[in-house]
Image (tube, rainbow, N blue to C red; front, top):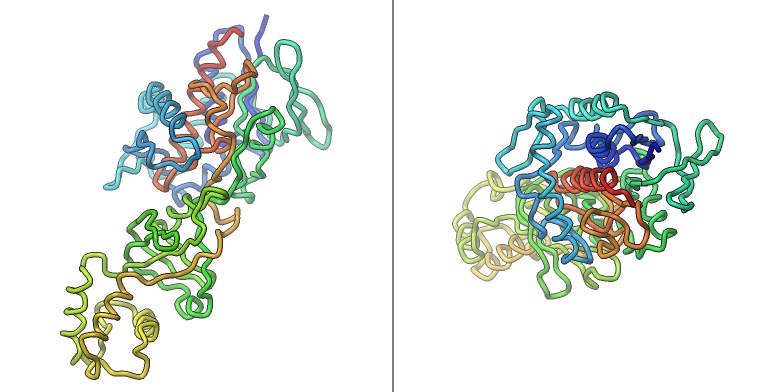
Length: 410
């Protein structure tokens, strides 16, 4: 009797799950991939600015992920490690390169090449791809599942022995996502952590000041505070926008702003001179008092003028400042605070925070209590840092679940 494995969603985790299931299954198993877009991989094409940062050399570090369940996360990451993703990619024919930070890219630096590689293997392995196929609901039947789908305006039921739910989260609605994955998990009886935009810019209260700085970029350190308690620090490029702050180092901090467990009084402190201690920076400033343009060679003039005013020095020349003034300016440059009022929306988010609680899963990503049902990728309460961690989680969870579904006889 032919077994049916149905993968819902044709993103990174769904394509990996379908390929891994087809690679593992015997001749008596049929694998189908249902995708609501005209073709799988739409969101994958846009990752890494079109270069597809698909993994990271430090991808096994649990500290690089945001979740409410760090214990189960470690077990699931260990299962992904055991799946040996590098060997899996090599078997598919992918050649990769690592940059100086450990980010892995296709050697061609083209997301289209990696996506095309996956699409080709779906075809080679005989996976039936049903495009423009929207999943409407999931129910159990004796010994398996029935999935309601809509194709060309017509609804029908697809029967399957095993179902791998890779329907994603809510981030990037322009790519066809809509939060249906966690909704399916909730309807199946799973506990779902509140969803929130993750790896997204931050909205700040100081909008009038920020409007004068919009478009400026500066390298520095961004720190997330909860009142007087320091939560995390990230270094990199900070971008000023009329609504708040952006840049990878700021977006990394957004992962800590989860509903119900995030800071109550969030603010971001910017250190624009992380290589100097405050006393040394004050001395540097004091030594520049006679220069015709105080900020030239250090900071953009607009940024310097904003700092000068924020330090209470408006209308005063460098020659008229004393040691206390230089100390106040240095202190501000080392910890310029911006009150965070919220996260930017789903369209700007790189991934989804929250999702199906990880303790609802077995180590092979099977949903406990529902034999033959698996959840993978962005549907789960695991959001990775920038740098390939999210795609490591997506591809890895897909491979583990795909192999498990093909091997299981229950």
